[in-house]
Image (cartoon, rainbow, N blue to C red; front, side, top):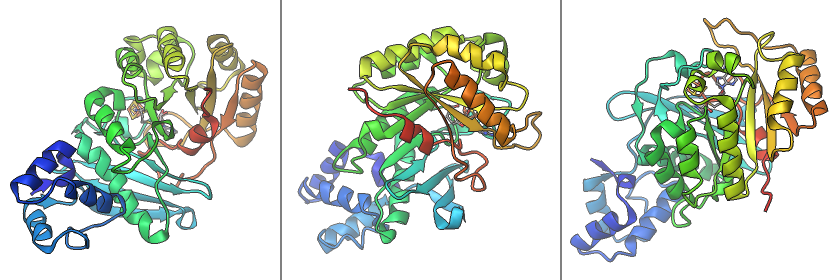
Length: 349
Ligand code: SAH
Ligand code: SF4
């Protein structure tokens, strides 16, 4: 069966016309998908014969949910999906009073291999196709519709490095933002990257002004070479220049992520280096207490040390927040940031 979202709008309209239906039916079908329909049979305003034809040709989604976990008294839920071909990825829904955020995966595994990250520890699987990324959001809406909720934000902070699957990610962003599908404004979509400079430059040209998050974690090359190995190819100063160029082009403030690893990147020296790197830049720093991962040499600083580091960064004149612990238990691979980034990142234009 062909997953229906693997067809573009034009392709689906052509299929409909070939099957004696009018092109506008495509919008009806998308509308049902965006509202959480899980079968073609339930699409009531689509003629019965057409529903049957769709059912015979297409699958509503290619994703097979194989496990779910619900924590935070029902506010956070994680779903593990099996992809066609057998790899699996996860997506996490986080419910807040004023928003509903989905943390989404762009690759099965990750080729970057940061030593503190659960995803980086497994061998790389494969890139997701654009429709597999969009289907995570459509499936989240399927979960949320009965609760009377609408997905409002999407963060690419699940498994994978989005900029290493560039074309599919940009295509999926356009589809997530399409008012005829989910209609999530690009400013409510965060793309988090370990720092593939050429792709950041390219993203700035796309006319999809998503919010960019840079996984910084260290302000000096010597340490960042270890924590984020892609730094050996794209050093930190060049990365910040590329990110700020993105901010200039899009008018969107960049968010810098900093996973706090006790004794590794939480010292006064680190705060000073961070200050020197970002001073007078249109930037926000988001401190993330490390979520412990087995078989890594790292541990999370205690609360007091986190506060001390935050104060030191603030004293450098930077805009800084500490992420809440939402989703901690649900986690492992999903990048554990999300909400802070969204709250902290406001349009400047
Ligand atoms: N590959 C992209 C996006 C996915 S990871 C990136 O690295 O930006 C999303 C975020 O989760 C990154 O900032 C990453 O550094 C962070 N992260 C990964 N493992 C973590 C852990 N164990 N504890 C806290 N944050 C973690
Ligand atoms: Fe990949 Fe991001 Fe994990 Fe690094 S932190 S291994 S880039 S998913």
